[in-house]
Length: 238
Image (tube, rainbow, N blue to C red; front, top):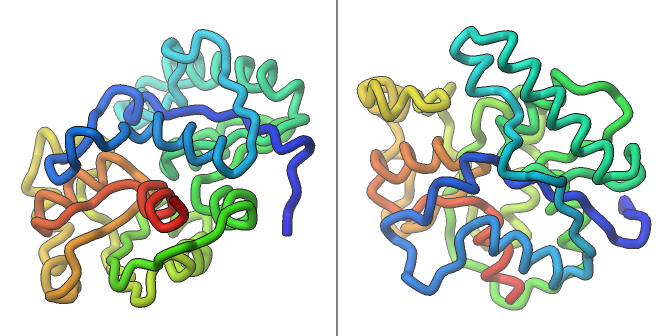
């Protein structure tokens, strides 16, 4: 098991998760993801450090995906500097709450920072400090493109199986939401997930992933509740 010095972590909530609220299935008193993540980390015994001027920061991926290389590098560089300062030059790990943002920073940053994707952090660092009290009966899980690229599918399955007795791993090359393109060209999302419904068991009404925009598309196409896997972890260990 990996250990963290003094159980401190730098938490960088993605700009998507800071700006987009809960989905249509969630109750009014459900916590927004960034609040839930804070609560979950504290319950696991972590001291949380946030980068300064957090709301000014973005990993840069929205600019990179549109071809604005200069803006991407400026945002990425500013974020790296802020995370270096917050982590005391890499002394503490940095948790990302969206896999695509993690993947982008992993490609952009220097090696001084230890940035950790949401799946690895929860599986290796958080779950050992929590007790699963009541497992879910059945859930569906979607590995987003960045999870496939960084080879975290086995870890995603292992994390899900700690929280549910039956886990369906949805098979799709790409959900088609592709950042924000699903908002602009919903046909991409519809085509990417054209085989989604037939993969979800009839008695399954909950799905989880690690990218907010992908989850929006998954919810729209499947008709079931799709949200961050952090919600699953929080619920079964509460």
